[in-house]
Amino acid sequence: MNLKKNIYVLVFALALVMSSCSSDPESPGREYMPDMGHSIAYEANVYTDYYLNTWEDASVKQGSGKTLLELSSPRKPINGTIPRGYAGGSKKTDRGIVGTQNGSVPYYYADTEPERTRATNEILDNPFPISEAAIADGKNLYNIFCATCHGEKGDGNGYLVRDNGGVYPAQPANLINEEFTAASNGRFYHALIYGKNVMGGYADKVSYEERWNVIHYIRSLQAKETKTVYSEKANTLNDFAVPAATIQAPIAENNSHDDASHSDEAHEGDHSHDDGHGHEGDHGHEDGNH
Image (tube, rainbow, N blue to C red; front, side, top):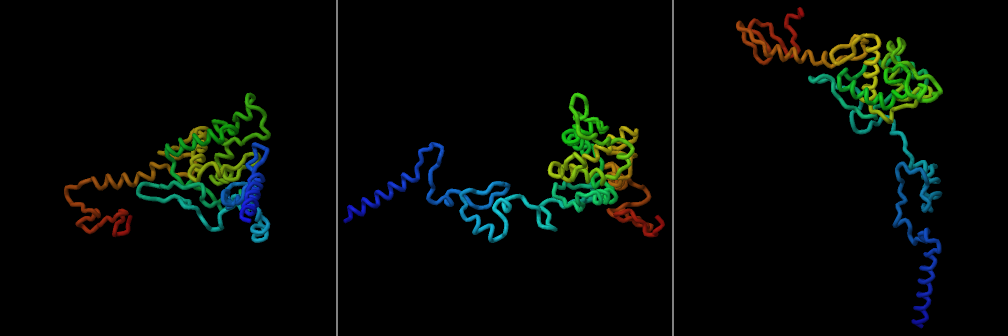
């Protein structure tokens, strides 16, 4: 009896092994419990359904109304949330304006023409000061992403529209003409976020600070065209950006004031005078006349 039972078990096991095999050398055969060897969890950025997930209808569609493909696809952050990092806007410190923001800074303007106009009217100042490093970084990014169409000089004569580059479906904007030189920073920033006409957006390619650096470089090209100055030391092109040197100047003035000595009176740490005209940290006078 035991022999007969053992034969049945052997035959069943042999049949199970044979059924797991395949004549096709490329086939992995059957898997007894595939979920133990293959994860059925949602995989980020995987755009195809997991073919071994046999519970698709029961666990996904009926529960949430969405397919596994939809649930594993990238989604926008929850409204009001900001990823870890700087949240936008620079911080003014005793070293000037500092801050290295990431590309997740919220942008509260939609991709519509009315919103483009609103951004153009409301976004005026560049939150980062003009510096040699910012312009150099902007130049590098501009040559990578913009010069192909807008040209190395910003005149709209890029490689794609020149005879040796081919035919482009639309003439790129001339960024150094009077219209764009007078335009606010918001016009450029909105275009960098969403694009314009056949130009695509670059929000996913350049970070928050990098976008503003590109604008710095475009402004420097405009200054070169108009024979004005847009540099770390001065800005005679417009009122939309502050040169870094002008931010550092008050600090240098403080240092020089601290080093100055007068033979007829002693200066303490708060620059107070024996005659009662005390100077505080902001160099304010008690008599209020300055």
